[in-house]
Image 1 (cartoon, rainbow, N blue to C red):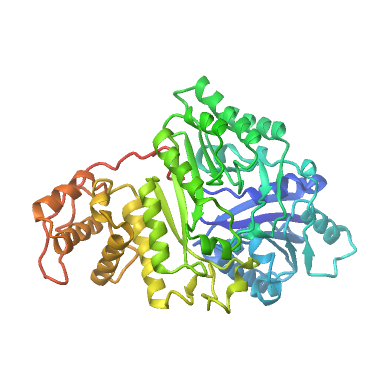
Image 2: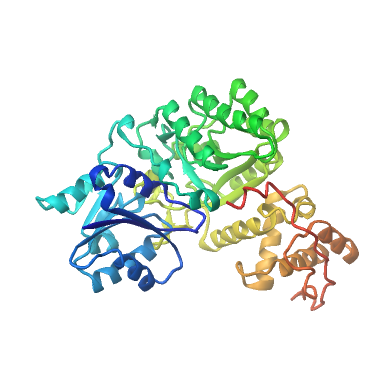
Length: 511
């Protein structure tokens, strides 16, 4: 019998760390276990055809699916087709999307077995029972959490193709000690570290094979500063030894915990070598208390300010709109405060109800209404109507296109001026009123829209608006195609000439 590990990744550049952990821990079953990753957007029948190609004549097939919020809809379709054309195939599900609220999911009804939580040792054990008997009677199997030193690390399973073309996900620890109610890590009791010397030996092996991009998935990378310093010194040593062949490391850090020793290490990294993802989520103390988020806002702000002014690290800072107790006004205050701190990117997220997270306890008191379909985005709550939530969703989309893209670096400060949230919301509302679209807006058209808005809403002279956009508009097109006709004036604006895309950490940020 062949065992196939598979999932649908969000894009080809992503490589599933979870599946590689399973394969690394299959022991004597490793020889009959295969790994095949797909990408969302493929036809379910094509995926099923490839899956069944692993089933040799006269033998059975076990298929283990990694199920996440971004792929559950498509994997459900794949499983439905697979069970229709090959009902004898044994389907085992695992992953965060099927680890909670298992009683009401169609994909679980279709599957043979489900592993909730950790699968490193439970999946191989389940496969042995299926193969050798006695056949498991229960569909749902709670994942066993082994001691960390008993989990075999999977990094040798990244292929040379992975190293050349894909993001390498790594982790020095699992879990999180914090209890933020919107996050699945709120269910963890603590953070569990891997042996740091063994982990760094694996990183050395990857580096020697040519790996230069390392994305850490640790929830709290800087919680244990001693360990953090060892990891950062590993990368500093590589940079010092080969400055013309740089490595790039991405970490998620706790915003209010940046002691001097860690700052000294961060300060040594050159530009383009280090990225931090920093979860602020909300600057509202009442909201933080309500959702069990412990954060010293003053220290967090000071640390972000220090990172932007005293280091070369690229900062990607997260805010979440739609949290219980957060009004548009209070979110705007937090957004404006964050803009003033100067991070390179602000990820404007909309609250999602991840299965199993404690945020659901506020449903009645705060009238939380979530989309019943993945990714379960909030639609409205007590303080923000559905219409206003839609405005926030559009703001987030346009913010990515204009601010986070880096293509309007000179124009953005003019747009934001002295009231960033309010002014960008005005632009967002105007773009939607003039396009009825949030996607598939060509970059040249977007530049024309921004130029028109600057003239109509800000009273900027046409020549000045065109010159401003031309100074930093960076599309693939050579010019704006004929300008943008305003619905309010009916006038067509002159095109603004594009120039080359700013290379804002271009080696790595696309990943």
